[in-house]
Image 1 (cartoon, helix red, strand yellow):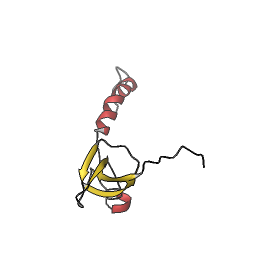
Image 2 (cartoon, helix red, strand yellow):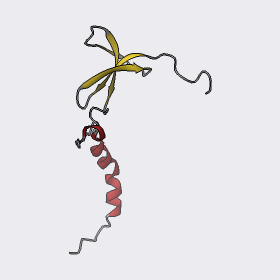
Image 3 (cartoon, helix red, strand yellow):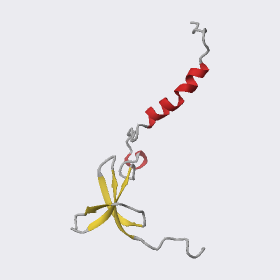
Image 4 (cartoon, one colour):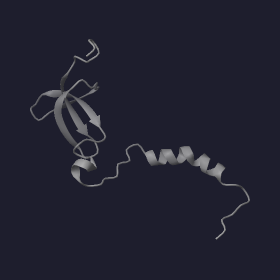
Length: 95
């Protein structure tokens, strides 16, 4: 392995799955600006994630719709102009 490319700042952090409101404590070098007090009374850095094993359909066996940032709406507004270009003026659907 190359020397000096791996992070050395591993520390205990809390990961919080915001889709199912579950948290777990583990070691990581992920950056965080927030802190949280864990059940042991100590304060740890908080890293928020949108999906984890606690909410992912592969692990839960349940399908769950997660649209966290209005991704579908963003897609539709971004590509609406292409749909208009595809329609040719003066032609109507023949049934």
